[in-house]
Image 1 (cartoon, rainbow, N blue to C red):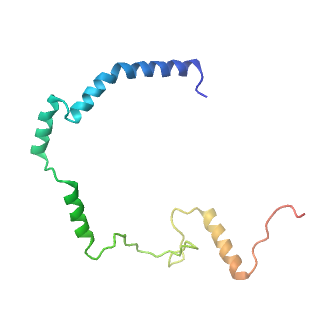
Image 2: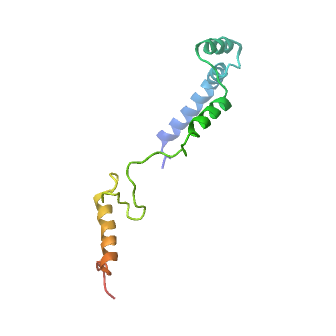
Image 3: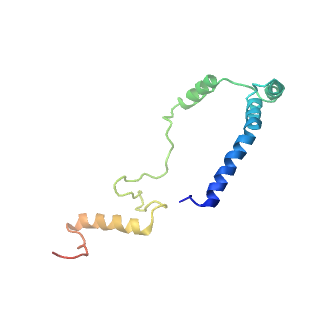
Length: 124
């Protein structure tokens, strides 16, 4: 796919556009990263508006807050059986389709009764 004349022409034109716009894009990136002389004033304005805090300090704060009795795990209201995917009320998760639920129920019932439903197919 993508071998038609139209797609080849489009690829060629996009490549030419990239060549043409590359210097402007590079200048914009430099200004955004304040590597250019013009960008210095932008960064000083930004420091007046927002407070710059090192990442290590933030990480330490988060560790202290999380360390107060939390293991970092979310509290879940209902407990699910990992094998059957049923909660304590016997309900399947909301994301599970009816077909999947029926299939799991069939497996569960087959274990209870001792033998499962006979599979369809050709008997050789």
